[in-house]
Image 1 (cartoon, helix red, strand yellow):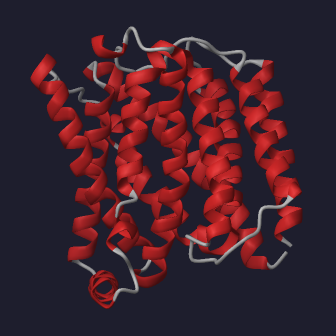
Image 2 (image 1 turned 45 degrees about the horizontal axis):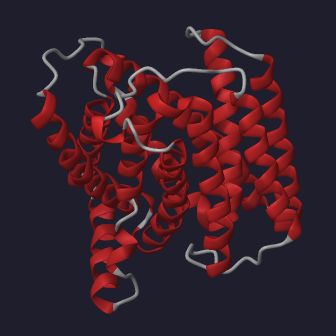
Image 3 (image 1 turned 180 degrees about the horizontal axis):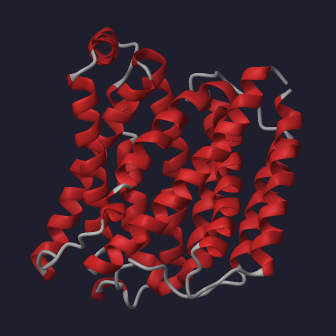
Length: 318
């Protein structure tokens, strides 16, 4: 495996670590606001503010954004390549709508299954800028093992994460199967998000892709939060601890890194390494800053299995 691909595997683990830390921070903010989507909206908004400031002081970054506009006008990029941020909003919405009903384990397994199986298809179709990658027995087996690993890791946990919203009245009588389909669709969208962000990043740079992602995602979250506000009103009080508001900055980092890394290792390997990074970082967080759920043996076993899955997929990558 070439050096760039090895670096990509390390970046994938870092991306997963960032997702885990951001999830813990946004979850804590959501718990204090009593609204998980409001927390995500604040996170996206602050991340976008940071990006706008960075672009305002960097001519090189503005040139990258201009290349994206030129590519759109020329047809090199399609308008749907810019909609990756919708998938982030869909994920947050599904988390808030379904976790309280089906539990953390079922939600996580459904998301990861959708993400990894969709990654096989996205790689096969060549949606990402690294080109087409065939579906092989090794790649399919690695994806399946990773789903099993997440199931094992989550089997020692129960209940909803902090910040999860209550299930709306319209969904209370819905079949469990339907509630599992929603996070699976969110997982499918995550693979597509990584692929199209990589396309935009290949034209205008990773931060141009990140800016587009945050703009689109924030618009979608504002619309979702508007629906919630009509029903329950705005949060009455915002916490004052600064660390609760750094989730957006972390998101800027791992979205930009993913837009770069997907060009080197493809969507499936990026998904596998990020899942492994999430589980491993969750273990560290459970030790350093434990929650009520605590650290379970199954989480450690599941994390080890994801590393095996990464190894299997790496063999097929060459």
